[in-house]
Image (cartoon, rainbow, N blue to C red; front, side, top):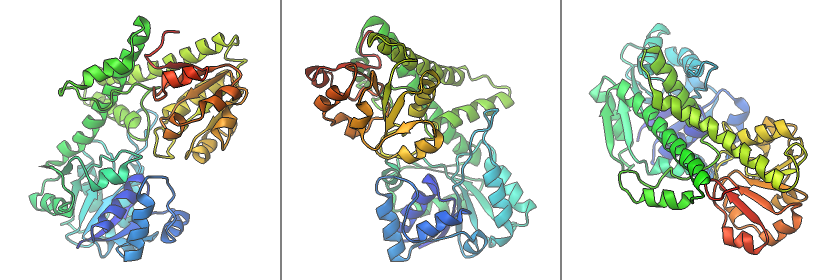
Length: 436
């Protein structure tokens, strides 16, 4: 059993803390948000993530998991300190390390000798060196070691990913520290990569950039499929059987988004440019993603025209606001980017999401957000599906058809059944599946 402090109680921090507690470690979760900590102490989690509520409740009941806003006290008795802090994107594309730097400054003098500080935040290459330097400048013991241990959690299935990781990456200049951190994961069955800090940090960025590139590629192919009246689902299926390609991340959509891919591709591009390295594939990935949003809006305008209205005059319904199913996160949500663009054209927009309504309302105070997806469809000239929730697949489309003003649905996730909707008198358009 190890003693662990997890600094930051967002998606990564809370999941990390709960999973280590689940495996019998003594874990304290730390956050400067006092209100959040008080809710966590009572067992109320601030985010929607499948299985996380149960894991936190279990940890609190067992005594393996506790929460505090007193970081200095929390780190004094810990062998490991995990930094799970936000690194948002700055206006120049670089990663904002101010939260990491502030935490290091606040906690340095409270850290015990021999403690291992584990950077789990997504940070630029070289951040382990930076954190180590800052710790010494702010008075931490000389033998404190900083280790990179990037996370690879997918929102919506973060608990599953945390308990059953695809790989464990640990990077530092100390083989002993690498081994100690790796040992924390001995109950997690996964291959290990024990390496230097720069390589560990780059594995995270390279992984996200590659996946973003794969999404942008299939989105480009969906635009080509539209031009030739091909079916992108069949194309992706045929590609996916090739083991060199694989089927994952070959589902076209409105564009990639979320809390990782946009900022991580931008941060990697910025870092490469600072070193004078050209990365045209990353540049193209980012540019192609922006083009996909343009493509989606082009289809929205064409479908509104089919209902004999310009988009400026149309009433548009939105199903889905979260950046993906299984989460209430709307940060860099492709759905919200489409909503933003639609709102620039017309104010007559109604929306619903099974989990993200409250978060989206804070982002779009002017948006009419309803608690019933069928109410959203009432009087709409076009209904747009932007998140792949199962509730939308299983909807009563006879009722939807009766509620719609015009029988058009634009499924940007290609999750709905064409024949099912056709039998209910609805004309379905997807991404790369139907020529308008």
